Image (tube, rainbow, N blue to C red; front, side, top):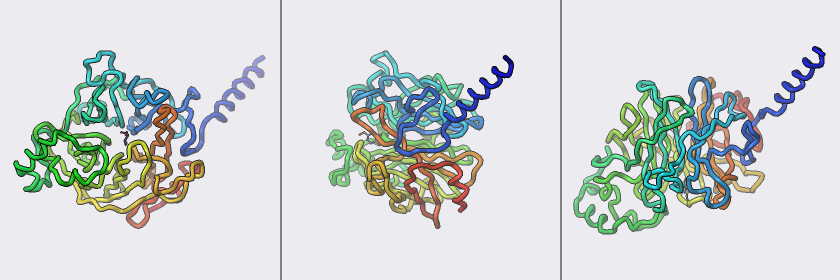
Length: 386
Ligand code: DGJ
């Protein structure tokens, strides 16, 4: 009887081990510990206590899934292949008056840990319910435990009353500010030449700058930054947060003016900052960009499209980022020069079925290369020594 029990335990352990994932399969469904496709879109990772925590947009089936019906999901993993569903870190609210009322648009949540306050801080792109993409706000939530529950604090437009470090005299000109205010924000969120003829920065100085696609970054010195598409998506802003990470400090720069960078994702390797981003074409994929700087406030230099190869399941290559759009760059624990570029493959007609494209970044002579792989694992980085 004892032998049979031992055999049974060994068999179960073995079956369990066989079910465990041992590789990344970009663009394919990715089952969590319950066998359900991971539901954490536009996500980012926070590493805490040697564990990875993946936060992302929880989506439901159909087009309705592009609006927040549930909240922000969180998953945990030790090995990056196998993810445990840890539930909803930040639920949307049933109160229709809340900024995060069910049915709002809540995108690209990112969580960072503040070692001084011992709090986990979440930021996300927030669009108020019923206002399309017009609000262009940033939401902030806080928790004592990494998996939450997070408490929503407030939503804001960044840096109200502050000019960027690299403001020009023209941008401060009251006449161009008045002329732009008279336009009443009648600017599209996609590229037009009209934007360049106005002073969108100046028109939003008092009330705060627009903020849509975003990420967070904590530097080696503990300073945290919020990077977001601003000025109707035409220009990216990089803003230093306050020491508690709960607000903007008023110190920020405008970068890549009128380059229409969305989906910013950043990392630091060997003292240099690398940023990847997409162009601005809604849910449809476009060509990725990569950029480098010696300091986070720039100057930033564009390095071109980092993508190489073709997604064998849809035939899409660098001009469409394999069908994906960047969301985060993940430093792999315990390995030098090991970074994973995380992309979303959106499925706006059935939002919950959006896929994840995770690919290794190769640093080659100061530039970035992100090459398509049907399947890969972390041993890839041992061959990537720079
Ligand atoms: C592109 C952004 O990157 C996404 O996060 C989302 O906001 C879509 N646009 C909506 O069209």
